[in-house]
Length: 235
Image (cartoon, rainbow, N blue to C red; front, side, top):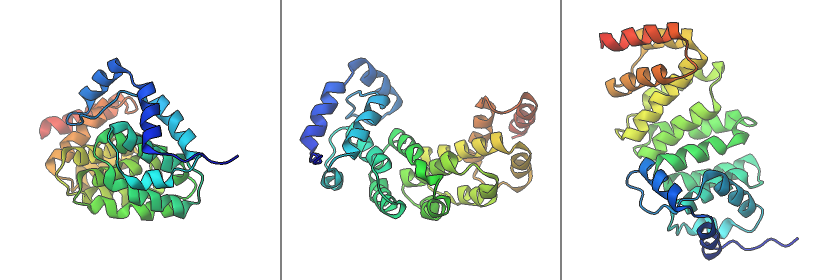
């Protein structure tokens, strides 16, 4: 079957059919500063992205003429869903990451790169430079990729070093690092408790937000939370 050419006009027309005013109001409240939201729910975006990924989408992807938040989300999701080899996918991800301009696109797209589980070494090497980026959402991308795909014992030590490399001052970069610390804590509480008590070189804001995220986690025991709460109170 011949592939259909994907164009911005076609994509926007489909998005308009899916927009939900009530959801736009709700989602806009979660994304301060993002004004171009149509209000398309994520399951519908994922479904549309899978459809686009089966067609001729490459020219549309590289045009980068997004008007709506959902268009940027779609371009990221398509790089995750389209059939391609790992190296080709990484080249598309590399092209896409600079276009990330809010936490929702960063987190949803990062979590969707499921072949990171199949090619962990390549992805681990690929994400390394992003922790050092001076761009807020590039740094966040590195941290969210880590917590989404590399919560494994063999990555903990280097993962902590990478999180400490994040010196981007943006709120969303720091909060992603704190989130990653909390996810590592839930998976490896004994190791992470030692890290937080004796080895941690995170800045004060990220450190305290890490403790907060651990206390908010449903995966951390009451006993461990009591220790973290005492650490937090001691300042």
